[in-house]
Image (cartoon, rainbow over all chains, first blue to last red; front, side):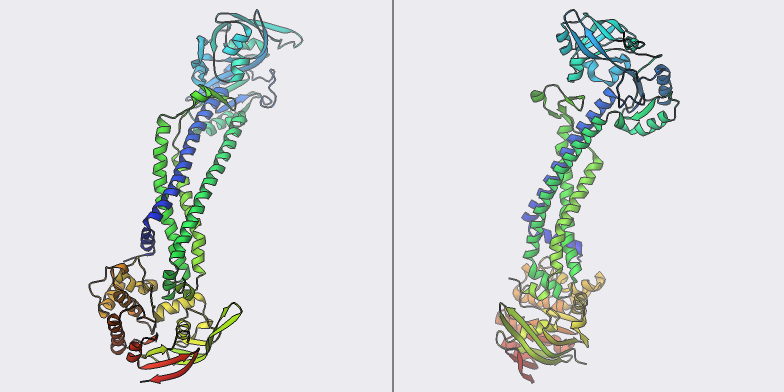
Length: 412
Length: 227
């Protein structure tokens, strides 16, 4: 007993070498695309995680104009109360407050314009990797209003070391024509790998930075941080439902658009690359299927002569394409998983070329790239491989329907 | 009613600026049960006439009626279906589908007709036995001799009980002993089962076995002899 499917399978096995080479070609292309995607996916996941956790949050509360105009006066007042309300609504998230001020950081030998970042050190140490990048001293203690951390490059430029004294001078929040100054002691020196942090930022506690702001219990940003992005929508809905006292709620996509845009642009570039690979593979399959059809013209002529409808003959050719694609998709997915495994466990280490960290879209990234397997996307690519192989068979199948039986039988 | 009725049939081919008139107005009727040979030298038009009767080619002029139906009025699909349901074909070479066994080749037309698997298999085995190939049903064409392959082609041609079997030089690639055996098989099918055959050939042994011989020369019937 036979069917179109078994005839198609037997036809593919007539020329085992050609079928094997075609399947391998498609499978290798697919596995390359899948592996590259998994590496990028791991990279994006890490980038997002670092970016969201370290520079914003899955949801942030801030002054409505803060996103467009980072004026020091654009604060959220009663930030502690709001933080408590956020904690009550998001018991599984980390809630933190941040202050982004600026001024002149002065040492006995130099004066440098810097940013002053006010943080909750206990929470921030769980969000940002900077706490793990101390080269001297230690991370800040909660409530330490006199402690400051500076980057190693900034420390060198200021000519201060651990326990050194620096003074922050900034406009008086109540009278900008006047200035205020605040004395800090260097508790630690870090190297984050991010130029803006290492060269131009001092990190202190919320208590240390608040005197630089106007208002009561002010902060520039409250962040809600979960373990992953799956809670963002729910957290955003909760925040929008709260009494925010004039603050605005944003999801990370709006709070850190550079990160989102970078990932989008990189994804588009990769998709273009994947499409080019797919196109090249499809050309190869078209050639293979055409050759296979041309070799069998007389045989097809006999089949048409004895009464096989042209459409059914075309279905035979398309079925051969489906089987080729399915075999290649299975093999390619297995190879993709095999290639991804070492990249997901050991990773690709570029530290020799680029150092321990590299700055991407304002986020410090490890140069050890770890792949992450994305089953949904792998299935989509596998299905695409089958679809592309069937499409590659479409023209040869169409040619078969144009055959006149007597011409096909008499074909030389 | 005649199975085939041909009137004023012409077929021209263009070769560059030159027109080849392969058939020049042929009139012919084939009755049920006939064992008819179209004979003539190469280029006489016998294969062309056979192909036109079978709907494998389209005439330049005239008409071909198979069981009263004008082939020119049929679509490609209708002609395919007509060949599937009412005609059987045996070609000089490349008759069989290489990836199918003898039995699967024999039941191929039945499969196209949508017959159920058990009925197809039964009929295929019957026809293979009739042509003397019992026990060879599971062999592929490359495991059969030329003569055996042609017998499988005969089995396929008759499996669906066609009104007419058209055979184009069926013995051309066979040795004399195998030719004799094949001709004998087809003669037996004609005499015992009433299968109607039309051959295009210049094999004298086929002509000898035929009860009607139609001579063609330069695309015209010059003689129509019934024995």
